[in-house]
Image 1 (cartoon, rainbow, N blue to C red):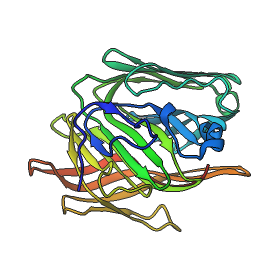
Image 2: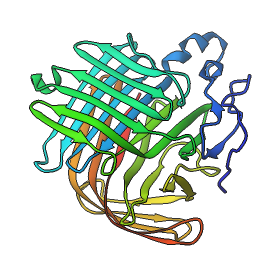
Image 3: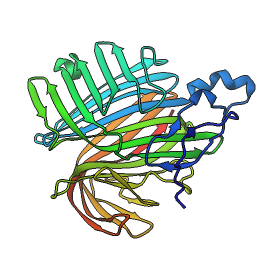
Image 4: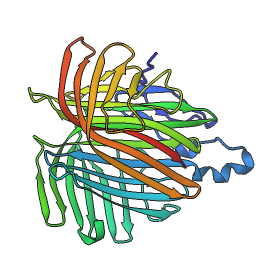
Length: 346
């Protein structure tokens, strides 16, 4: 049921329809969003307001979780950063809404270029370099003037596999997404008077790179984790669903020491009225069985009349087992990550 894309090509055909549907281990499709065609002729000038683009970075260190996003939703830009202290449980978050995305820059593909924003007292830059990604943030006014400064390098050797998926959505809509897990992180995080030296043997970063056209009302689940096994190998999880036609491809996978081990359908079992209760994850092949025990809930709500969203992102620990493509059973014990439920009108 899982169609693997192995040959390079374009995301969209000249007709505006998806040229290929499936998943791949490397980002081999050119993201030619200018070819998108999902409105009738006289409405086509309005299409640009429906195309969504974002770069979301996350970094787990032994003491903190850091995340930064630059997003263009078509009719508005959104820049936000949050910072979680594992010791105190304190969560700090700040964000900006930029009308029509003025001042945002997001590159065509995930393999090159600079994503950046400067304005309203904040500067964010995500730059793809040879073999790494540079994450820089300077936000003196973050969290009422406490301030946040970030300078991180995430390693990305060309041989590392990542989960790239192309999923069709009814009405010529689509979801094109790349998830990169287990990037060794090095640099500094500075929040107020707290500075952490981030070291690659204990800290890992991930990327959620999304492009596409969603229905006005959208919903999805996502779970992600990046960590180390006792033998030093890196272990990542990417689990998701709720949007589009995933019968030919899902984004579900285990990432073991830089290699994708593909999973099919995943069931998220949780109580939407009590998100802090344990979550359960099961796959359709009997290869994955996990329990996720949250220790912190992040709730992010946006209500701008026609545009709204509500995210319940739970930070916690995964425990259980997963079986690799070669049949090896991988025990998972207290792997820190997150799981979320997201509703949006956008």
